[in-house]
Length: 170
Image 1 (spheres, one colour):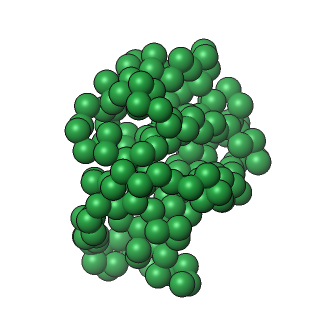
Image 2 (spheres, rainbow, N blue to C red; image 1 turned 45 degrees about the vertical axis):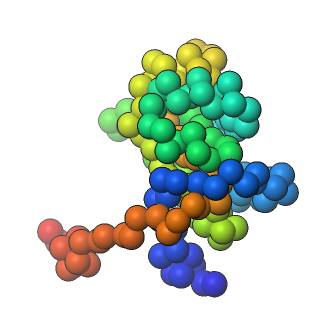
């Protein structure tokens, strides 16, 4: 499939089969995420893979939705702002942007492998920090379950292209 088909295939999945994710498939997804570009190639990211039930339940405290635990794996993407590039003129820090690029690579690689994901940012940062035992300076950025979708997921709804593209000026 070409990139346009892959991008269209990626949807937010909120129900998973209990089938395990093969280790080689997980590795390929993580390696693909690792190829993501970052500002000044700083790569200020970390991925925590949660496999066992106690670890997944601890993260569930930070995002208490029952469907979330149906996936066999949960991935937590964290960023390290102090390691990220910062724009000199206004101090803007690229950590979140870099985390978003990594997360996009991760979710697209999962879709290519026939697995589902759901980008989650609506978690309790304090509870997630505790569940992951994050050291100082590491910030939880996003979560995603990872597994075989139980159904087709939610269809994508998009604004018309004319509403978001501006030619030359706003």
